[in-house]
Amino acid sequence: MNDLFGTHFTYSFPPMFGLLVATSFLLAAWTMAMELKRKESLGLLHPVIRTMTVGKPAGMDEYFWNAVFGFILGSKIFYAIFNSEEFFTDPQAALLSLKGSLAGGIIWAAVAIGWKYYESKKQLLKEPKVVELKVYPHQMVSEITMAAAVGGLLGAKVFHLLEYWNDFMADPAGMFFSGSGLTMYGGLIVGGATVLWYGKKNNIAPLHLCDATAPGLMLAYGTGRLGCQLAGDGDWGIVNTSPKPSLLSWIPDWMWSYTYPNNVVGEGIPIEGCVGNHCNELAQGVYPTPLYESMMCISLFFLLWAMRKKISTPGRLFSWYLLFNGIERFLITDIYPHPDGYNIATVEKYDDDRISIDDNLISTLQVEFEEIVELANYKLEDSFWNNLNNAKFKSYKIAEKSGLSHEQQQEFLILKNENERLTYLINYFLSIKEKVSTAENLKRIIMNNGYLN
Image (cartoon, rainbow, N blue to C red; front, side, top):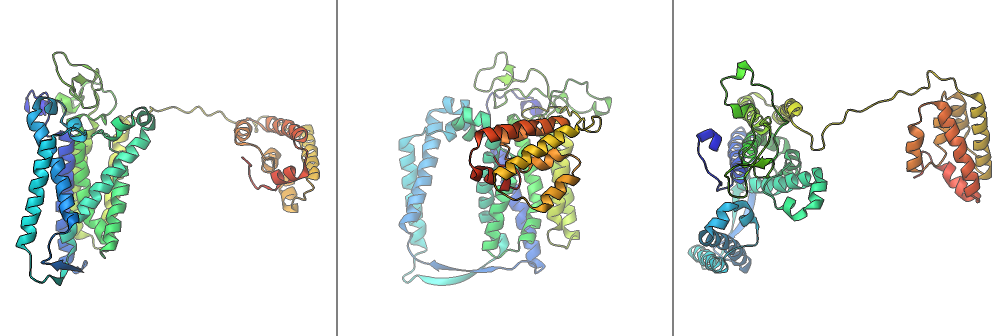
């Protein structure tokens, strides 16, 4: 924000990442409501009938939850007022901590209970009655959004923790309660599954529901990535020390290469003269990939929004969303770092085509293998022996019935030619005869189709 507007704020309240995430949900809900209304007007979606009792007093559970929410809200607000310096130094940590004002919590809990009592009394009837209401899909948007928010945030956080498992194990509480660090596809998968479950429960056709959410999902991802850019949550690109191309001379330098000053993850070197928790910036500029993704996704939203009325087949608009989203992620991959870096694989070719197979080794291995089979008192099917005789590389076929452990499988498979594999199995069968004394164990090994771990 300082780079954009030339300001010099040392803290951000509300936290930009959380603010943009909340904005993303609101925008997704707004666009979905408009699409659901349009589909209702076309007769593609229909209301459900809900029964509810009106005129009865509020229950104890309603008072309880109002008191809980009031207490949490009041404790944090009063804490922020009377501990402003500590709160504004790191608002995110203060909001997610157990710190709060007991007096403020009690006051707000009492206010919440009183407000609930006032509302309940205002609607009270002498005799409560049961009414049936038609509830249209667009009227369920707030509930759908809440389901998506809970499932999406939980999925995004859990997938991020799995992706950075070593960091999570080093600091479980810090990673879990951190406001940054969300994996988009985790949120999409779990949030999407939650929304589909809710839609099925309320008789909303799943493909029409997917289509209604598609434009909003693209827009929400775009605004969410803008939050990543403003917060500097670590989801930036690779180091970019290249000079800005003349074609892009008109854009600000920070759109080409950015050091993310005051980033929330504390990466980089200290900023001279800065005081507070977020006083680091990267030593070298990197590609601001969250900004690029935000620009692409918001542009793709307008494209999907223009396409929606021209597509009549259910599910096709959502398919376009998935395709566009995949293309966008693919395009950003080259300048987006993998958390563990990239390794260039070294592939060594097998020598089978250049080395002649030793017939003596084949004969010796077959003798040892047949002896093992005989000791096991087990008769292999004729098809096995026929396949063995016809096999070009007999070691692989015999290995299927060898009972190699997982570690031995790895040792066997990295051998580069048939002679080495034949020798390995001969030595293995010689050791088997020494270690295994009962026919039952041998039989169990040989009867297994595939490797025995």
